[in-house]
Image (cartoon, rainbow, N blue to C red; front, side, top):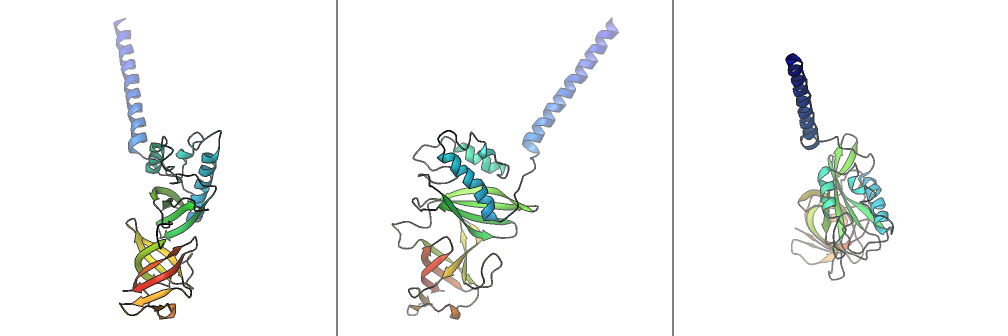
Length: 250
């Protein structure tokens, strides 16, 4: 009888040890061993819109919301982005949506590629009707053969009725640009939100004025530009690029 009790205690101890080890493994896998990040193949703009359009539809719905549909747990979001969105779940009506970055929910949204490097990309998401100058800057990261959303930051917007110019940046002029940019046009390569490598096409018309190192202002002649020249640009932003109003070559 004593031997049986000892055996029972030993078996019980082994089972308890197994349960403890299993619990520790579960905690390690949850908090220390990150799960595999899912990605989506395609262009960065398409990846972003595939997430943003269902989110907008859910925000507009009267019988559900994005959190009830589980969109805040989308597998193409990084863990940090999921946590960030969930923190904004209880935002006040006067505060912007944590994904759309819009206080007044738009009818539709549009997206424009800001930059695309080998491992990262940035996409600007804004209201299509531009009723609200707020916008979202979405950062994507490359993993294997796809992209995942690794950051969403809200920006007050590059346009607004109180500003003379909707775009004002300093950077370098570049015409030899890789796809998907069109080498037919000059581009400004600039830094925004501490992220280098942002690219925007520049469009010139009869009202575009240029100055060169303090000289008199003249109508811009892009054929005189030199590759990689430093420049400051003021103009009006659109979904396709910037219509230049003033360009100063440093």
